[in-house]
Image 1 (cartoon, helix red, strand yellow):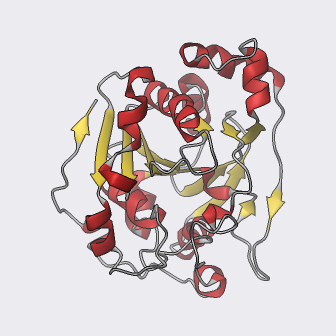
Image 2 (cartoon, one colour):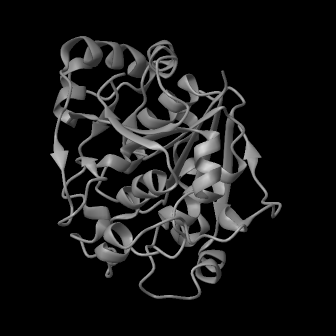
Amino acid sequence: MKLSAVVVTRNDNYGGDLNDRAIYCLNSLIETFDEVFLIDWNSPNNTPLLWDIKDNIKFKGNLKHIIITPEIAKILTNNDPDAQVCNEVLGRNMGIRRATGDYIVSTNIDVIAPRRDQLEETINNLSKDTFYTISRRHIEWKDIEAFHNGSRKYEDWNKLRDHLIETSEERKYDETVVKGDDYSIINCCGDFQLAHKNIWNVIKGFEEDLIYVLYSDTNVQKKAVMHGFGLKAIYNPALFHIYHGKGGGGFLDGINRKVNDMYRAVIGQEKTLNRDSWGFGNTEIEFETF
């Protein structure tokens, strides 16, 4: 079984301590997955996040790094000044379209991924015809620093994860974002969305007209249902989300100024409106492997 993960980021210290969160996240993704796509979208000054943290990453040749510069990001979002500054739907699709795993995970730069053995055990009991969202477990820096005796020891991240697995509980936090929404299922459903590659290809990834912030994660889950697939929230294996403030995709902080129309994204979505060129089709996109 080959597993791929896709994560989009921007070197803007969103939420504070972004570099530290990214180090824990990327080290865990690199260990757990056979292939990791890191899409760096619209980083200021053309300085990707990876350049700042690479000395603390344990590379093993499976990280594929794509850089979308601010100039290209503007073109790809039609020069819309209100487009999400770290455009998740376009960046994720770029990675999903090129991922080669049997199962593909769309996730965020704030998570500590599950252990490989536990993730495989879970997948072996899942249906290839169901789209899954795995509920995260909440941790804060004080939890991490307490385990590391007051510091943040990147080299011991896997010991931290094992400790958290042993001491944490399942997080069952249901959510509905708008009346008539049967598709969000859990709070922050987009932190770890897992499906067989066939599902991602049939639904054509995330809706590419949802270039603003919010509701795209719920939207992709509704799309799965509209295309005849199952949808289910699960609570294991354990994965962890490092707290970084208000959330809301940067809207609550004023980083992003416009939200997607919730009715278009949730109630109004039927089958995908994406064209066959979703994820920029078969366009050759340069990436570097680490």
